[in-house]
Structures are given as C-alpha cells and as structure tokens.
Image (cartoon, rainbow, N blue to C red):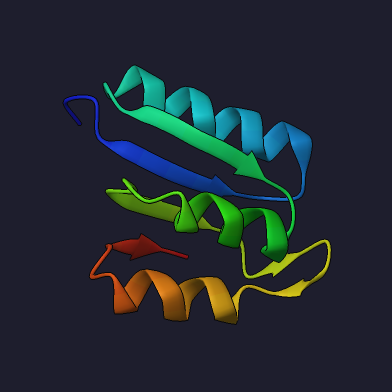
Length: 79
C-alpha cells in the first residue's frame, strides 16, 4: 500500500484491530479505527484518506453518510 492512508471504521474492537493490523502489514497507514459514523466523518474531513474499509453498522447508525462523502471524494471503499 506504500504508506496509503486507509480509514478503518468498525465498532467491534477485535475486528477493528485485526483490520488495522492487516493494513499495516500491507504497508498502509491506518486512520482510526473509528467506531461511530461521526468519528469516521471527522477523520474523512481531515482529508488525505486514500481508501477505506467500513462496517455497515457503527455505534451511532448506518455508515451511509460516510460512504457518500468518500464517494464524493473519489476514495475507494470496501464494505
């Protein structure tokens, strides 16, 4: 991933850590993990996100608003 900044949005701590570890092992730089939609949106707003791995349901609701913002910014997303 060559230091690509990858947002991880997952509310289950064990899964979030596993995803973050996989990103780091692939050479990426983890942004987050974010456990809520609001947290994820704040991280996206900070800019510099190259890709995202998202859980559909976070602590405060559906990840739809995060997906919309990432798509608007042409950021590849894995759900």
